[in-house]
Length: 240
Image 1: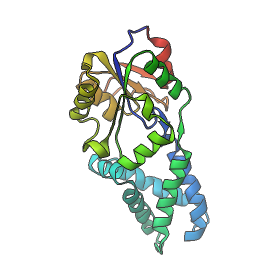
Image 2: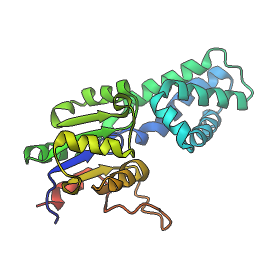
Image 3: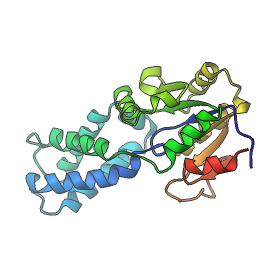
Image 4: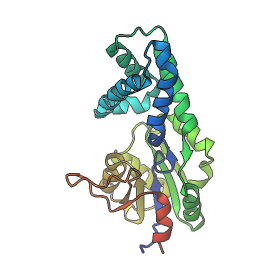
């Protein structure tokens, strides 16, 4: 058992709301719809090429930054690259494929089991809560409002609004100032080792990695979380 912190900073995507968790499924569904329209009988072929370009695009931090702040443009770019690789004419398909995927993914997002109960537990027990999320302002706020999360948080910081995102130390300092809590008295909880855990630890927060994929920590990982959980629901039973 550990002492309950004065404040907890939560990431949103794949910490509270399933987002990357539904990405592959959403791309597969989109490819099943559009593969015949672009002249590919096998949807898996279209999916595999799009996925290859998606992984390539997001492997670079500068491209990753552009992608998360410009999702429609990023999606259209990787679809364009995929169709070009397959020797297919765009013919208006790029926008339809990319935008249909975006709609499918947003519709597929869902609250993770136990997430809301966990947030309500800490809120009702007097712990200050902050939502700290990278990404576009409008897209992230749609999720906040869709799942009625706003009343649970004392502070909400979205990268697109603030001008920079995790792991920038300014993000953590700003949120801690808003909560009027010292870093030593706060937790950072999130699923991304670089943005959430490394960023949180650099700012002096006790940082908890949500390993939702159950992949475990690589022996060569430069980041060593203070704690590892599979879901935030585990946090309720470990505090006193």
